Length: 451
Image (cartoon, rainbow, N blue to C red; front, top):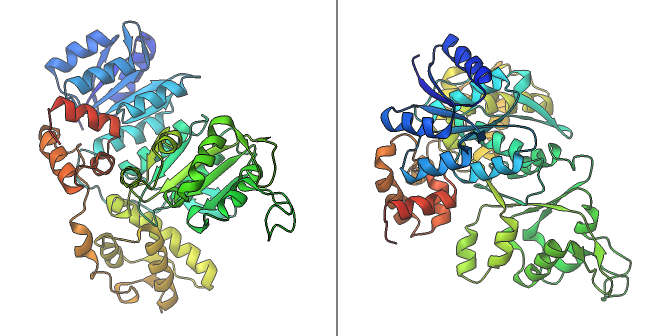
């Protein structure tokens, strides 16, 4: 294998243990005891991955990340954190860390994260095998499957990182990618998991009804208020309130929402008394909210209050290696729903599924597999049982993301191309480049890119 890894760890016994473990698994490893030594090593030698402790005797992982950004070194950094350092790990992720690991280190989890970091720089890997039990998790009455592609693995790591905190999370992603599942996972892994999870479709809230639906109302406060109503905020108190497609929230209600979040109080319609609520907010959007702000449709102060931490859900076409895993899961699900006994997806059918662009993402894949199971006359999904999938492929070939990872030496050109593609919108460009907006700003300044 001979992949070069730099370990930055001041605990010599722990660092030596890690070094020996990596070397036994075929890696080439250099161990540094501090930040300065790591910087000196990085100046003279290139590495595929950096594994750094968060706390170092002459600095910390945050300072090392800043140093790497200033010198345009795009080596993926995995930060090792101890108990109680989640908030600092969040800061590291925002600064561009690829991932994080909690101590004590789980060797199997470490292997997965190292492989994911390598895969971001490599070409697509072979299709995954059928998911094992560890790739499945019950979500209420529904079982979901975890993708194992680099972007999926990174997303789940971010979920684990932010879930125990009280930060407001904004989930960005195309329609059909499973943003509500991500919100549910955050809730399930949070300290609020015993509390309610209340999901609200903001697109269904009219200007007239939104205040009542969100904050509740008193009987008789308006014509149709025939009884007292508990709003979504009160219903979610002690748990999580998930606002789906938050960009559709009526502008007139956004100020009331901001006040509720800042003061942790709501005032039901028709009353003069405030009610204290304890709610964590998670939002989701497939809309460019920065553009909505520019157009006067969304309040900037509310956007920043909701976007304390952003998680991007990758599209299915970015995670084509996960398609066999998802297809197999949806096949089993369809068997139960339709009382069928389709046992496999043929290699030819999988090849066709992986060659499609999936504009409808997981939702579309699920529908395709259900239809294929229904029409399968044998115990396998074949090409003949699949619907025609080629007619939409052209539509999405022009919007394939410009990831910075495979060719770091062409970063400036890729950033310029991404900015041109989205007419200078930095939030969209950051999503295309698989980096956060702060990192994009730093790189724009670094390369002196004029907008």
